[in-house]
Length: 418
Figure 1: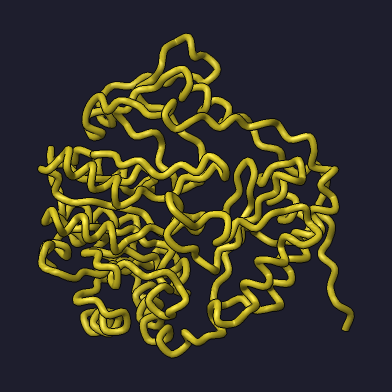
Figure 2: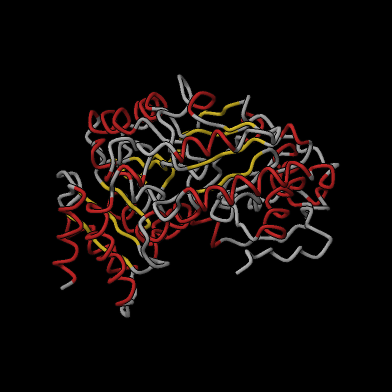
């Protein structure tokens, strides 16, 4: 029955082979990595990777060759590495066994996957794509090109994010002859549970059957409401919508993910953290990802003009009360060149080596070889084996300071009269 369900999913998305996992895409990514490289073998890795990638490096003893993202100094965003960056890395490390890139990012950034896949295949190595936020991409032409159509060899998606599956539901797809399907399945068996959830399997199967029939213009940008409400988030809020006109183009993301609404709140004189807390307390709306100058919302096929209006009302109300959220501490974002660290040893060796816990308030005690980098929850800590510098340590310390939270009790949500 499981084999039949996986076959249906592969047929729905146009992959040659599909595998289900009930342990999340964190397992699927590690299985893909172990299918490409082993102990002391090199793998090109985009430095904006999920923490599961660092876990895979530790588990397998893989040697990472870090490929830097494209830093956008204007927006303070890191877009995925370019195809030229992967080409340069392969030229310097011709013995690398493959490459891994993350796209889309939580900020909606998308890579030029076709160009990266071409670079990898020119060198005869496979491309793994961590496309956890892209389960919906195969089902509409107005969405960014998904990994299989772009020529990737393995694509990992989280069904529970954009595919309406249950938590921990993950699907990974395979095509081409650079990775044998039995090897990929064997790696998944090595890491996976022997007690998989039938409910998670069933939800992933239902998604495979439902998406091709429900991927109508109303679910994406052929209906004007996602774009209209993305623009509406800037109206009367002193905010700026970080859309295609501001973040796409040469050296930036290849194509925007239209269901991601990124709102730059710099003009309000506060931070995205405070805006998100305020909206959660007052409007019972959970936003997606926030940082020192942005907050964001993730629209899905389950949203419509009514839920989008709730979001827009919450943003406008927060902007109207921005004075209550000031002053915000200034966050100094270091130049990426100042944060680039030397790879001193294998991540696995550093992880299992002896370590000392050093309080962040005591930098004079020395720069620890492993230092947590507080960012979004799924971001990796600073990779084991990469040293620290005073500049990078200071950035960590600044980001570790407590964030602001609402000090007043939430206002009860008003309900329409009967």
